[in-house]
Image 1: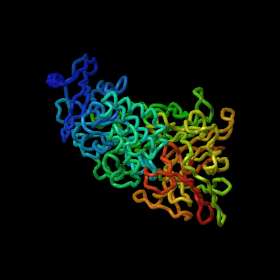
Image 2: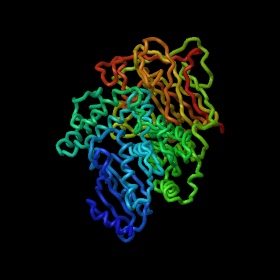
Image 3: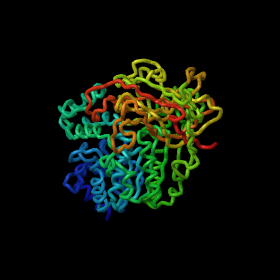
Image 4: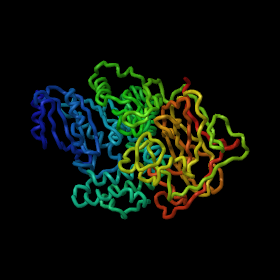
Length: 613
């Protein structure tokens, strides 16, 4: 009976593709509540080219990156394992109707899609979702919609809590979204359906470094005006520094929306070098406190969307670091959608990869063997981690001894026309303008905006504070805060901080290796609150906190712990012009004299969550 229903349904669908193991109904137009139809591909389980009998659980991905992408889409793997697998273009993208808006339509559209699926004769009424980055965000959006059929999710490197450390970071703008908009306005947008317009937008994307150098972005002044919804969002996002209800609304926020979040099993996946690492841990902490269903998180040493690989940037973490991309997902879905008793509910709530226990030698692939291993934990952050302050001193040392000087400070000129280059870090959507992951903090031809081959530590506008060589291994696992006392000649400026694992010289690395572990930024006007801007008084001293992404790293015996303090990290973050003008509306740039104080009354320091051996 079911085979006849499916065949009858397929008979009225626009495009049909048959394989031995699955049947694909392409370009099914699913109606939303406002009449907009979203293009959807549906993969049915089959044997010998004929659909299987029965009702099946569904695995769904809602994506802005084309439902037809990939040489062998993931949907085939799941259809072969007894799921109906579905990919859908989100509103206004590729073959779907409507106007694209960043994330905010995905709550209602997710609910309506789930309701449609649950009514189909081939559906058993249960849906699981998968996807990475934006498509991880669409999972959160559907969970926030309360869709009745949604039973389990696996958000990977998911968009969430965007006003904290995602699209805005400490009040600064993450320019990877400038990159994302310029690239995607010419890929799959409504405007790009016209060949001539697409050609203009693609050319603009090829010149995005040049446009980036000319910000602020003003409406109507670049080819982006041809894709108005993309220009509108980018200008608004660059203008909108306050972490208010716009950034906290469903679709952008999880931590502030847990009351609406459906109580279902959630497996969060994140990477220490991913751009959404802090949001992943924030989401886990918020959901674990408020939900009865199993909430679990896995944090590995990965860059964005690359959890099936074990080497990133210039660093290798060992073969065990890579996940089986299909295997861990199937275990979760089989447990919660098929009720297979595989013990997934008994897995540790927190699983982390502790980096840094490798040999430190150069691998055959010319990478640093930083290494590491997996460990199960009961909570995040770790209750046994001890908040350990390391203090900044006038002579450039970093130690657990607090400064004794009555007055001590270090000043530098921050020229926004010559910002500190970004070399690796928590990057996504950095294609063509930024490197991802762990890198030796040294300039060269691989960093387009360096202009030299010097280590970053040689720059006058970077304050370097480093410990003596460690006399024993020290594990640092958890979120990291850099607490500074600062002043400036400007009414507004930025302060950045970067944690570095400084390798000693060796036969493979005669100059050592300065490995970035984590970094962050604070725009001074948001020093008191991310919700409300407040300019400074020039020369007045203020306490600030620069929050770094969380990590788990062993600083080995003989290594140094290093903190670099500066005022820019470009092009990761937009450069502060130091003028105090409204965000993204400045016309001038001025050099600021920025000062970090490190005396007895104002002991600037980094707090490292040290885990006892």
